[in-house]
Image 1: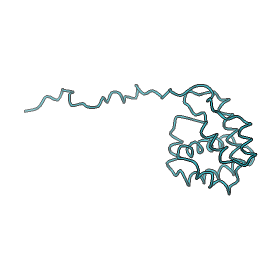
Image 2: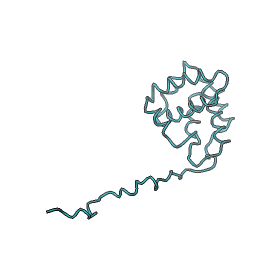
Image 3: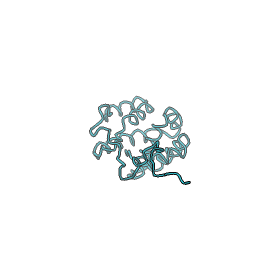
Image 4: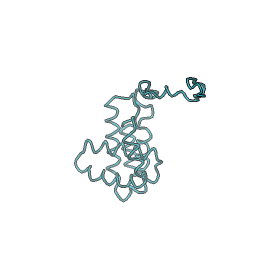
Length: 154
């Protein structure tokens, strides 16, 4: 005898919630300027004091990456600050600086490296390639995959 299979009591998971028509992007992030967003003077001061690792970490921690934040002026300012910091760090110092970063910060650094490749300035491409090599050594292929598949952009 055949059993009645039209019963849905065996369902433990509501698979309909994963329907692609129901997919929503996480919009819980704020839309304005982050309250702790560093300014040019603060970063320049850290660079002039030789605290390059602190300057890099400060910009990485406060990167405006929310999905809803579509303000290009804020993102351009953050990119300029990050490029200023990355170009001021010599290639011999990069290993020490990158070792101080956690994996999320390495991923954010990779995002800025790729963003820097999109808008190169004179002499920045070679420096960014060195940054990419050093960040790849720490973050691995997983870092590149996370950066390329993440909805949050810098």
